[in-house]
Image 1 (spheres, rainbow over the protein chains, first blue to last red):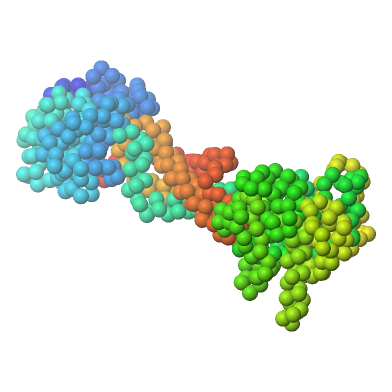
Image 2: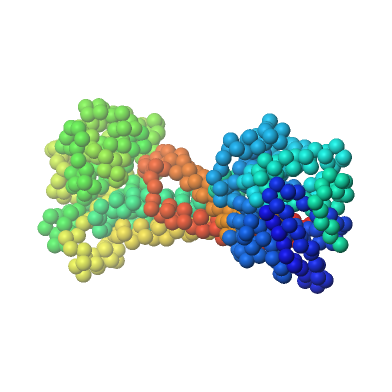
Length: 209
Length: 430
């Protein structure tokens, strides 16, 4: 579960960005819509603990992450938040499977090769487990990114523009995948996007202005 | 998948960078370790062969050459010493001298030197018989372990010597046969490389040669060896008294051990000889120190070069890490997103530097010991000195620590930079 209250952020030399309160329960999906430059990424980074809050609170499962600092925030993020970026980056030196496993170990969890392999199978990329990232397609990369975000069974999955670069067919598929996997992991799913195609499928939404 | 594994995977991802860093680092470390190993072994060889000898007396010439020839058997004699000039020294009644050991050189067998001396030389180097006996009569020899191992000579074997110090069939003393009476155990000193006999044998061999030279009308004037005919018919023994009975003959040098080396008369003894006689006296310790200093210039230059290579290699590690920081900007941000703390990211990069340095150190150490082993075969062929590559010095631990330190220093700036990655800014760039 995630909720925010009175979030406000100001970049040095910029104007205040006032963000609406949001709430998303486990197994729920929340769509955060907004056009470019209205603070979508800022919100996402605040929710994900990638950016320290200035004003207001972010609660994830009864933990106020704005009160965590340093390595405690890093650990909390690793264990409880899975993030899928629009542009996904990977550790190039590792294989697909290892990129998933590394997410377990960096979060401080036990590494479980079988669980990682199973997750990849579920995402239909099990056969690519031992390929290197540079050798797989863009669509496959997106699936690896989803697997990586899900492997620790996070309380919250944040997806940043997961579909905006995809055609309708792939857009549908990825969305379905995210929904399924979030459900399977029992996570809350927050999708931040300007892709208006999604609002027809997801009813629970907040619009940034 | 811990961070050591992650660091390792990042390193092997760039095999060319890895190779460059390791080759440079390995060369630097290898050269430094090699110099250490070589110097230590050389010094040990020299020190072992000092064997408590306080003074060497020989013909005037280069004192260092005389020492190298008489004690290390790697240079030619400075000339000959008429026995009549050294008679006071050879007497057992000399107040300062505990032992005076005469040496006569001039022949070799398969480039192992035949030394005419007395049994004291064996005692001096702590030699023990492994098989057979010490020489007692003319043309009997006792050989060092290395000679026996290398030439295959056994007790009872006979061989013919060759004139000078380098094997040469044209100079073989065809008519003179030596008999092996005994073989010494290995001592690690120069004794292992020698063929020992009595002084008179050396005289006899060269008389014989002088006769041959006369009859065949081949003047042999370029040799500074003993050509004085032996006019006595009696048997020779191994005592200095025998030498005193042949005051008209010559030897190459005398090794002197004082009774008390701190005696002030002993301190002035060598100087008196140099100032007041036709002979030359030199202290092995001083001459060998002089030699160290001369070699030292060379080793210093090499060592500076080695340090330079090591620093350049550290720089190459720095550059490759720094470059990869730029390329891996997103990766590092991502690692942070996945839960790694700043400290962990810092450690990751430092580890990469340390691993590179450690592999470089290993490569260098292998190079050093392998190189030493290879070079030792050449040294053995040229100087009859056996060095070994299979010896590890405590100083190599210091080299390891310094290597790791260099790796750490090379990695610290990229590591700080990596730890300081602003996740938000890095990931906001689309």
